[in-house]
Image 1 (cartoon, one colour):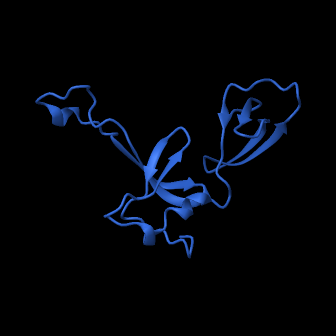
Image 2 (cartoon, helix red, strand yellow; image 1 turned 120 degrees about the vertical axis):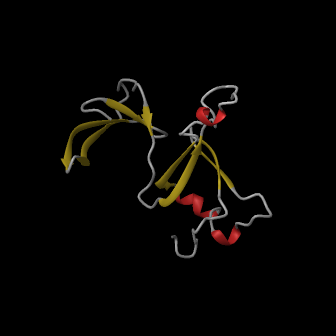
Image 3 (tube, one colour; image 1 turned 30 degrees about the vertical axis):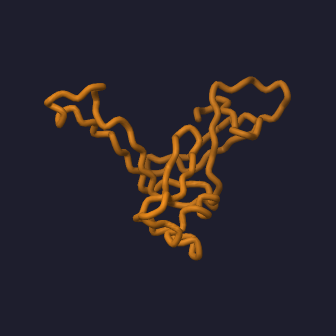
Length: 137
């Protein structure tokens, strides 16, 4: 988002335009925006999606290439990718994930549920999940 620039809302069809923002302690805490749904609105350069207010907090691990080169050499330890695993400890996901992420349904002997996050890839519920669908935590 940028001041007075249109961004499309994924699956909505309108353009979101932010007119102003409020910053506290160096962080954006509020946006004042408007939605342009006019038939002649300009086509935005990009689109955004959002997670609903009742989203679930979770940890998400994103895996990249293990090595920084296509073919590791005898110096393979120096060629390890420091970003081969990125952990987002405060990720938010759609509440529908609760249906497949309950710790009571996860075990080491079966394939655990997989979900696809748009444009990110496939994710599997790990054995160390602590999510309890009865409490929502």
